[in-house]
Image (cartoon, rainbow, N blue to C red):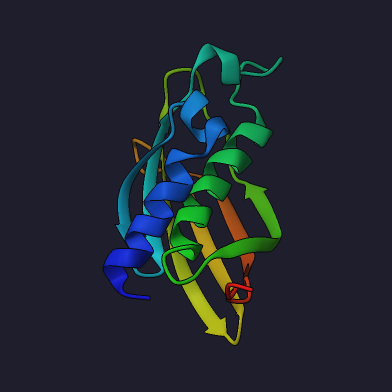
Length: 138
């Protein structure tokens, strides 16, 4: 797959992601094995502690990961986990940077760092990708 085709595939996956569109997630960079994104914390994303819901931060990181992992080959997440470092609040603009750490066979490992506008780390997300086998016409 050429890089242009891979970026187009990632962009198509993102465009068709209803949850990402609903929550105003923006992908600011599609690259080979990488992607960057932004999301502004809205009132609908805030929990009972008046902080951004952890599930929302996970969704954001997972969306940026999906764009990065699909830049190489059509892939899905096989596993993902997150460490919440500090809270995000209503109005915060969050940024996420997804980077491939290693690829072996159909497997890959990506790290996503979620930060606030002031550079503070909000969360660290690690996901394992699994490339889907190529399909041929019957």
